[in-house]
Image 1 (cartoon, rainbow, N blue to C red):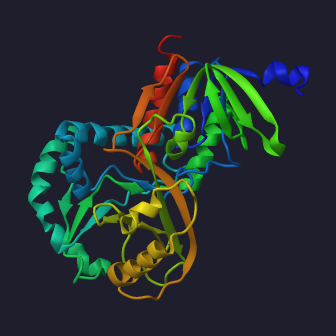
Image 2 (image 1 turned 90 degrees about the vertical axis):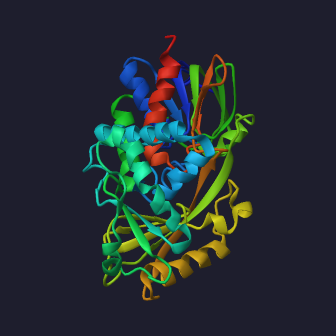
Length: 374
């Protein structure tokens, strides 16, 4: 039973955002920037964001050469370019909003490891740079085979190295805490441990701790639940994808720095103050990784260890400190879903594993949709 005060202050808002990940918090922040006096609440099912926003490896990237080649095949050059620019603009919005030092942004460059069976991509390097130069005014991709001996990768498996000097890395935990602080400073209310059971015509029903049901109303609702969206909007086309990430203990010697992709982006690793953060290999077992259940697929974990030993380091003189999983959302192509669902609801979901890059811009676009008729 609600008190008079609770009913007065906690049951109606101008805007309700479901999901407190990068996209949800960015939506709330953009709403307060556009409508400073509006009441905005963010509802989060866990005691912290639990999908991919706090689970990723901290890449500030916008697409490796082979990934972008695959995107052209899937959706054409124009759509690929728009997606790259959305990712780039999203990263710049994140940086300007929070500050590079706050998120520990380090612009060490991004690299792609190329095996002999993908050396055909080198034939496309010039064309890709030509496509991107109109937006970046420089060559985005550079062949840097000269760095291979220094980095120490297995030369029997890795034959070429492509550098993107515009990419970097962040501290995911610091980013999320900074987004929460930014939202709070603007007056956004954040309610944790409040899984949303349903939404209908501006009504949001949540299941609170202890089993209590709480219903609130909002003039407009934004669904920002990414891989978990099917519960609320089953009609949206998306498939969940679990990703496994490990971090090593500090190594005595780490011969490389930066962010790295291989296997068309299915594998990715980076340095973190003498450690290696390494994730991916979903392609080993797509069927079992299309899930919203957190957990560790031991087959994939063993493959990550094998590739770390044989391809990346060339030895097994490391210790794993921690392993975790996150849940992403994918579709037929890599464009996110940003749309109005009905007169009360918008959705910004299916970020294709690029939430760090896309989340801020998707949030801004959702805020524009929500306030268009205000």
